[in-house]
Every structure is written in structure tokens, then in C-alpha cells.
Image (cartoon, rainbow, N blue to C red; front, side, top):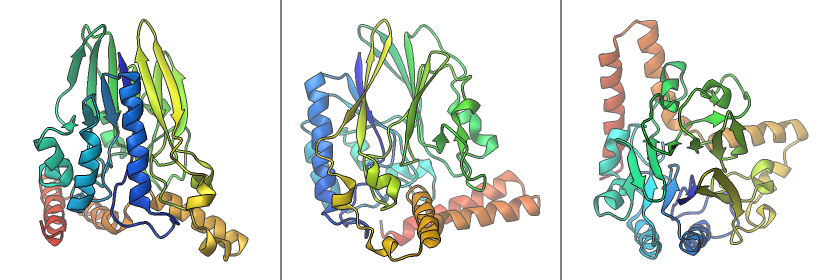
Length: 323
């Protein structure tokens, strides 16, 4: 069986300030190439690691044009919701989003609830774990781990979280590959961290983040990175192939660093680091949630009250969107 995996499209109508080109047109071109490759290789499914859209209420024109591309895809499209796809970092709101709309009309298939079993020449079980608030807190780390398996030949696990191959700033919640090697999944496919990391092969298991297909930040890492997808072939062994997108232009042609280059060396380095984090994290939302969690922990408020507070924040965000 064959699968194509990619992640973090962040489809949007407007161009980020760091882009010199038309971001949406470039995004459509890259997705067309991905779907053409899927048809060429006759894959059994296309898998997406979340953040298909840059916000839950992205414009109808964006959804419409992307849907036209989906209609030319011969294989089914399976996805989990990322933090940008939902309201208030709450996956329960997904059915009221544009991602939920595409799911309801059958153009895509959400893996947020329950595993998918595909039985062809091999029996494959695919789990999907969507993003939740506090995804990478220690108490939520078990979400990365598949604990049981049956008679399936292979188990794939899609998860939208800050999984990395080596430690980063300890102030930023993240999960290390070494923390989850006990999982019974054969292949762990993650996103969220736009830079990605080199594929890890540990104890016969693969841990993969190819990086975001979208380049939004103008830091040096993103300028030097070229978007790619993963072709997974499951035969008697697992074969992983990286395919760089020909439609993705060199970073120095599409990313504007004028503002950064005006900073002094130290300020530029600090700015680059800040932008790298902002490409993954929405601080305008996270601050509210962090405040709720901090107050709840300090005052020893029970979990039901915490959950109600977080739910009300997500309701306000949804109401402000006008949907």
C-alpha cells in the first residue's frame, strides 16, 4: 500500500507580510503538484497532519478553489485538525469550521475520532490525534502513544503536536521523540513544528515531520528550507521517500527579509527566533489559555471549572468570527 503525507498548508486568501509573491496562488500550485503526484503513484490515500487552513473561518473563495483541486484527486484525503483549523484549540468545534464543512460533504475525511482500517494487500490501521490546548504538557503526552495493536500489518499515527528530535527552549512546551518511543505505531506522522526534523528511525519505528508545506516566516531556516512531502510504501518492509516540490520556489525569491536585515546582529537573531516560534504558536490565543491554567493551578480550581472556562473562551472566539 502507498500513502502520501504532508502537513501545515495554512491556506489563506491574503499573503503574509513576509511573502513577496501571491501566497494563495503559490499554495494552490503546490497542492496541485501534491495531488498530481498522488495520482501518478496511485496511492491508496493522501494523509494530512493538520492546519490545512490558517483559521477556522477562512473565506469561502479559499475553500472553493481548494475544493476544485480535491475533486481531481483519485485517492481519499484523510486529515486531523490542527490548532489553526479549530476555535479555541478545541477539536470539538471542528464541525462548525470550514474543515468540518469539507468533511460533511465528503471531500475530506477527518480522523479525529476512532482509527481507520484499510485492508488491501496489507492491513493498515491509521490513528488520528488532533491538536488540543496543552498538547505538549506532560499530562497529555500519552496522546502521542499508541498502546495496543491487533492483527494489522502496520499502524500509522497522525498527530498534530510539537514533537521534535532534540530539546529546544524549555520555556516552550514540546515533546521529544525519545519520550514516545514506546508507542506501538510503526510510523508516527506529525506536523505543527513548521521547520520539521530529519526522519528518525528508532527500534524499527519511523518518526516523521517533513516540515510545513507553507513557508510563512522569513527566518533563515525557512529561506533555506524547501517544502517536501513523504511517500510511504508498505510492503514486506516500510519504505520512506522524500519528494521535494518542484513548484516551491527558492526561499530567497519569495521571502522578504528587508526588515530583519535592518536590525543589528543580536536583534536580528532574536527576531528570527521569535518569528520561528510565532509560525507555530498563536500567542494572542495562548496567553488567555495560559492565564486560565495558571489561575486554576494556583487557586486549586477543579478540572470541571477549568474546562468550562476554556469552553467559554472558544465560544467567544467563534462568535467573534461572525459564523
